[in-house]
Amino acid sequence: MGTVPLSVVIIARNEAARIGGCIDSVRWADEVLVVDDRSTDETVRIAESMGARVLKRQMDIEGRHRNWAYAQAQHEWILSLDADERVTPELAEEICGLFAAGPRFEVYGIPRRNFIGGRWIRYGGWYPSAQVKLFARTALRWEETTVHPRAISEAAWGTMSHDLIHLSYRDLADFLDKLNRQTTLEAEKWLLDGRRVTPGKALWRTVDRSVRSFVWKQGYRDGFWGVVTAVLAGAYQFVAWAKYVERRRALDVETVVEPFGSLVVDQERYDRQLLMSHLCAYRIAAHLACRKRMLEIGCGAGYGAFYLAHHARDVVAIDVQQPKLEQAERLFRRDNVRFLPAQGSRLAFPDASFECVGTFQVIEHIPEAELETFVREIARVLTPDGVLVVSTLNLDHNRKGKAGYVKPSFHVKEFTPEELRALLQRVFPVVDVFGLYPGLRYRLCRRLKKWGLDRWGPARWNPVRRFLETLDTDAHELRARLDAGAVDLIGVCRKQAAPPDGLPLLRRGR
Image (cartoon, rainbow, N blue to C red; front, side, top):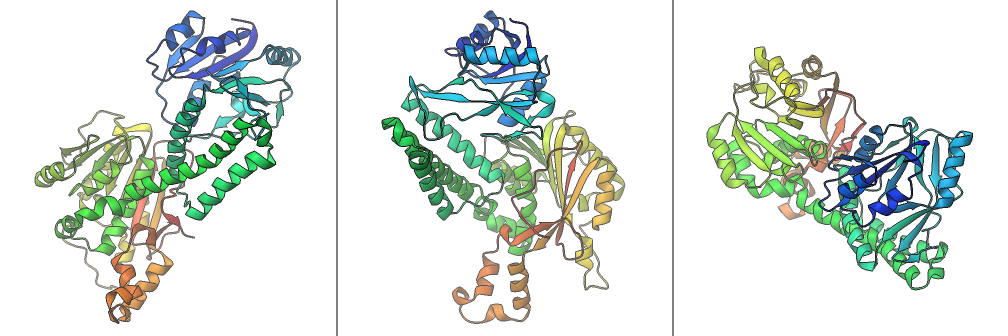
């Protein structure tokens, strides 16, 4: 390789046909690092034969994958490429000159010529389409999201004068294949971010993107391909929205659990109001466990683990009641969920076995002398970047207005917010405790029910009764401020600090 003090980092998967051209265009750099995502073709062999250093890592989240790849480079300065990109001789000369004189900025954008087949798409927003490609790795990190991650940097940045070649799509079929994959990831991103994308917003974006590409960005000057790219720019928004709606309807916790409503009522002793507050913690855990390996402690009837398995990569659910485990195995069959017997407060798993652990209204059943041991066991089986979600009833709420409150006999201990936080902080350095509150409309309907207004007229015409009979988790909100109004307490614990997840799947109150 060359002498320019720069690491070229190439992200690749099954790129045997294109990796050679990419590496050949950057031989002037001191290091070429290829991070391969489980290629099954000759990508690795070709890269190694051309002098590149190859590391293998399965991509989980694109932004996280990129951050990991850049951290493995030998040099401080990174030129980030995909296998379908080529550095032109003019750009190579400009970068060499930049390092000879000393960079003025820490981050540089590079214009890209985007091609479909052999056609350079010049208009419709496709050119110059400068992207952050050259940077000092300490000055920038990538948003850890599944599709189109943003470069996050507070540094001032410049723009190179010469272009990068981007062989975006081999042909129209390749364009459509990538659109299909990327819209799936886009829909997942919207779900994880907790976005509410309405049909009106989706329709507006569809029309706006097409018109903007074809008219305002002069896509018509590209002729046939200008029409194609404009139409598909709008189609991207509409298809992503359709997939978002499809997954949202399929993955709502109410949709997954409600077919087993009689089991929940008869065996778990939950009415609808108790069930929906209980399921709110599962929604939060599902968000945090997306595509991860998860352990649920105290799975009970098993419906929660079944719901979590729709989000997590793999779910192990444990409980001390063998009859319930056997029933759960019969009812909730999925390839990625297993039901296993628990062994008291000890966990029969190796260290760092799970990326997420959830235990929902279980700790109130554990003997007080074993509580800290139980939490330490959870910390032991969590990976270093893992997260625990724990929910329990709020003792302050249970006592509210009840001077002689006595906890149920099947509860060993109930917790105030302060007690729960103190227990968790003895083990975890990063602890957030939230209160789960009824939303405004829910509070109003509960008040009207106390006045007897839920019994007026036919049920289908009574808005109070109809609301309470169709109550869902969206009727609740999370608050960091804790008081007796919180029905449940939800703790989110980590072994190390992490970017905020935002817990977007529940409405946030003040």
